[in-house]
Image (cartoon, rainbow, N blue to C red; front, side, top):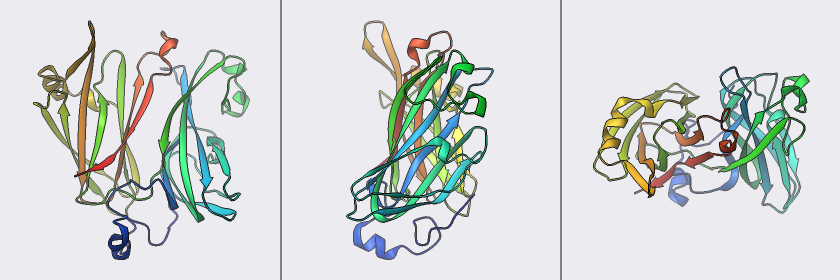
Length: 300
């Protein structure tokens, strides 16, 4: 679904005033404002392939001197979601669990835009847990697993925090992901690309190995007003080739990691982040908390 927020970057409206005042549309460095986007709000339930699940909890902080009226003005993603309106006391907090975004039972994943009459900051916690006994998980009979701090057969692990951002990356801006891991037996990386505009956007990416002597370039087309996920990008043989020539970093004797960076540009507004997760949490539940997120940052 799409709810229009007048004057936001990427909406097709002129932003020359914002540009001249503070370069507000160049990058995503501001972490607070009257319109802030949470890059990821989601619930992904267990499946036949995986006995793990993950969900988000979003926190909105009102930095203003008056009670804030906060409205969800845009949702970009997939699954059963709905808009929200709620208030946050002056200087106070409001936690928004994933269940408040859900309009039905089922998985969903989206970038969510919050608009407020007071300046706000938005952060999202990504939580994972292994369902040892689904029947013992709170809310299992409703189709959801509403567990935050653990109960019965659910084993929750608090994951990383994603910072909300005020403006999308604009054409001409270089956005970098400086902490990426090649897919392998232990980990896998998923790339998330969001296009907020009404037209398709092409994102170009250059991936560089740790030695700086190997590069792979890729282009991704993102449909209008959509979120593209790429869960197996680094299983491309091209990445294995250039990583072999200088992409492996020895952390300790016998312990190596396949490290790389990526720089993104586009012909329209976009946002990018990536998540690296453990591959096998069913047979190795001790690694369930191996979940990290890196968000795009503007670079010269």
